[in-house]
Length: 306
View 1 (tube, rainbow, N blue to C red):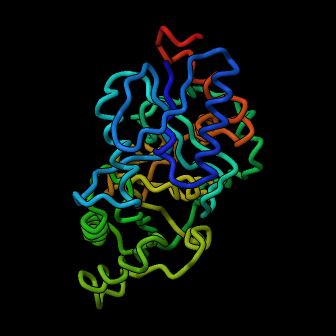
View 2 (view 1 turned 90 degrees about the horizontal axis):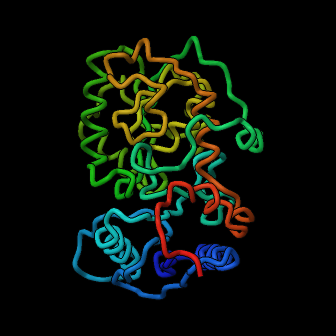
């Protein structure tokens, strides 16, 4: 039995997308159930959820954290069985709650934790996005540190404030370049306050005031990131990235040490980007059930057919 947990989605359009995906499974003569449980896992062979999950820091239940409680329960109880996870896209990202594409993977949503069945993919899907891969930048001026939502699930419980402070302190030891820290819109300038506390008066450290990450990447020598999706924007713009965790999607083509900041690795972006294009599917493709078809060979389950 496949169970699609409707309450893991918060927004109406996301619920509708899950409902259409459920219908596509039933059209394939599969045992698929629209599950309305709000808190607890319901036993099944394959679970389907919308969005990432993170630990809840308060015992008080609110509409903002109830879906995380449900997803944490599902992840814990479902254990080693197949879990299909819907998330925001990696390519062609915009700040919106209504994307044209969504990431769909098995068992997780991050690099080296999720299975997207996308190794050595063809370029056909990447070409649909109309994205340009700019040449690697030979010259640049500043280092761009890519901050993230300080409560984001992609931090895997990590402390973004601590990461920012330790990263900037290390960079100050290994480069004379300007270090510009880019905030996340959800933080409401909290990183600016942190920089003032730890680096106030240091002219080498600067808070980024650009609204668009592409503007922030202009004249950048290199970016530094944890799991920020802007890492992908960076490599498309020709700016190499040093990710500090293997769960960043650009890990395989990048340097991993901040000591390499002056001469970062310039890996093969093309195959990586072709593979990333097979992590995400359009709304119409999801309604047709194509992500299921793509992932099915890695879903080792019996008892799924009606």
